[in-house]
Length: 84
Image (cartoon, rainbow, N blue to C red; front, top):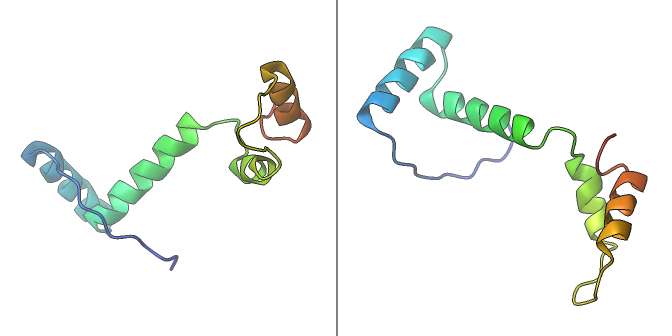
């Protein structure tokens, strides 16, 4: 099991009840349902972005230097950070 970070969130009573029913039907915990939903949200939100490549590319960018936005975008494509 991957290392987990404990957190606290506030849910409405109705949302919690629906999550609990879904979790029971799926045979998992409410926490697992929330983790799955968060993963799916991020997958959809960041579709087409290769985060591993982005992190690798970020190491090449120097801070506090003016950047050419067009060149940065070209570099993203060249380094496979953004898929065509």
